[in-house]
Length: 332
Image (cartoon, rainbow, N blue to C red):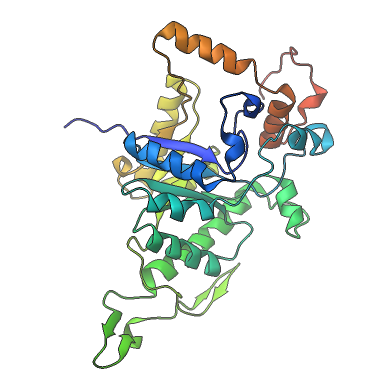
């Protein structure tokens, strides 16, 4: 049996996403991110190109590690300004039939009870094409703006995530039985109370006694994405994710990463082949190899060094302004 190639586009409701400086290119359209037509055009293109889904990244904070402030990120539009991704999905679903949508949403900054309702609503509106990219957040600025003194320690965020998912599963899968919706006009009964249950969750982080507010959506639980690169993140993915997003820079590292995730998935009692693993690729097209390479070189000439440093400093938590551009650094 031949294996299918899965294609998943990667974008963000902002200027430039992971290409700092390219917004200034004459042919760039990312500055139109706030226009609905930009997104519906993209959705139609992806559907026509037989893409399986669109993965929409998000952050709730600014990249302020570089030089100790957010000025570089603001000046270079390094994922700021950034709009909420959820509102993009219903209009894109309306102009497509098959394209799936992976919504990035941090569980560190929102209670699972209202969040579960938002995802169920999205799954209804997309007719079962909703997905959730589960993140625990990495920007200190996001935590501080939501009243937290600092981000919770890395592995502890995943412990918190485990209970968060437990609450969501109970709401999505356990609160409403099949057949709970009657829509019986003659008896004037819409739902059967005997088939709708309080989840009565009591845990370390959450107490949720009641029922899920939504009737079961087409999937109940949306497609779950996960992109954690750490050992704890991979373990979380092995236990919960249906799609795993990785960014291995070589075939050797990719093979090693995939084997690790599949091993962990099997140890978690799941079928390793059921997990789809997407590796990040930047594709540049041209009529010939030479034209494609020339286009790549032209794109590189538009890169903002300052914007790139703001990104990598935020991703790593290391202020790269302390290093010279040509100064070698050893990992460790």
